[in-house]
Image 1 (cartoon, rainbow, N blue to C red):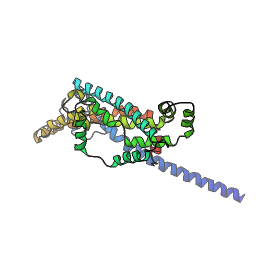
Image 2: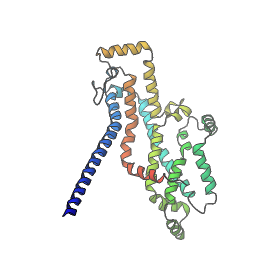
Image 3: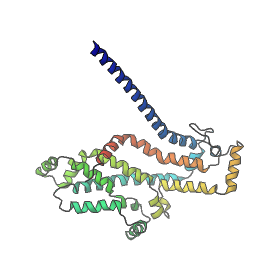
Image 4: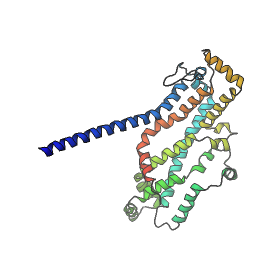
Length: 312
């Protein structure tokens, strides 16, 4: 009887300890969620708020003076739509070709019978840590006659070493019997890669698709370097950066800043776009496509990061 009472008491203490632990974990996770979501939600609220009113600050979760003017000013010209088409086209083409070339290289350098796979892998890994620099890179692009051409967005990004390591590590974990049986049936290496290997490495492919697509979508510096004089090749991020700089330049002088502050404090309403509001609008426009795509590849992202934790 006494043992049973002691057992029940111990079980009760364990239940209370587990409950307290669960409450602490819930509080910590709740704090993390708030700290993560609040800045983005606050940015959305500012982007829908009147520009002059936003200068007064104090906007938390909801805009004080709702307006579409900040977004209308972004899409007032066709240049933004054309830049959006360039960014979407670049992202799709770069993702498809980069994933294909990176995966094919990873398969080739994962084969044990490939004699020079170790020297080539070493050279690729070294390139992750040491590069020629900005000026030699620009000179190389110029020598290849890629300046001012759409291909400058694609060709230099065909193979990413980090993604190569992730895919090769995944391929190395596959049984060799798949490849050997395909060779016995008379399949060549390309057929083995397309019909055997590719379907088996879908998680790693989905994960590097996310990496490449996000990098291509957010890239603007290559446009600045190689295509700044070609307006028909300007990407969306570059156009948004230009628009933000123009908005900031309009309010750089102390007189303009003081006038906007006086107008905001007096409660005046204006359709004027301010740097604070336009910066928030640009952030939402640039981030929204990635937020839409990410939930569909989130599980592959976690798997891919786990795979990449081990490098040969």
